[in-house]
Image (tube, rainbow, N blue to C red; front, side):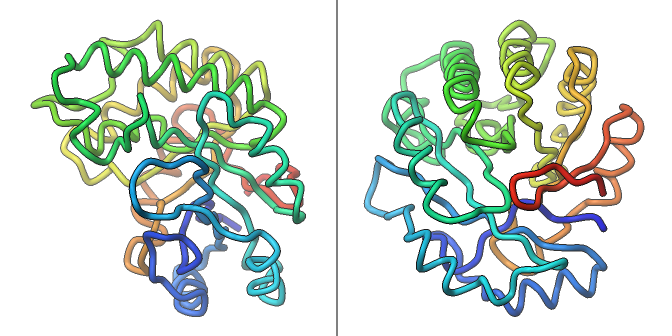
Length: 256
């Protein structure tokens, strides 16, 4: 079964999606679901992007099975590896995603981090930070989410993250993934952007060239309409690059 390995329910601070509605939608699409709630320690701003692992487990454990796995999306920052490691040890998560949501003490969603800074400076720092965090979290995470996350929100006329412009820095991230046996997520959120998918193809081709073999598929859904978004395209893209689609159960890789 194909799984949407990245979605958020009401446990996450930025989602109101109900578990029952998410599971109903996934079942209609004929796919499995992995809930991956936000755990971003030391996150800037007023919202609290943390949750209680034990309360989460109590809330959803009865639903866990073939159609639903329970995971977490950890916000990675330098210096947080030990705290994140302790967090994931509190309950037997099926899957742990690592993400970069902040840079220079700012939320990448907002304009502050880009203000007064050239794109090259910010994107290089983003990728350098990501590579270091993948290595420091190598035994903490199973998956690196949305390598192109910054391109969703960056306040530049051309926000794309491309191999042509940042190939050496992207290579460092991909090498870190291969070294730590961390899977790269094929996140479909930006497939709707004019150049979103086109920018990702060379990145995933390079991942394969450097030794990457597997990807997970993730919509990053915060509502039912987004679940499984563009998965047919994503599966075709993975197959064309000789990348196997996987998910995780009890922190073990499963081929879909």
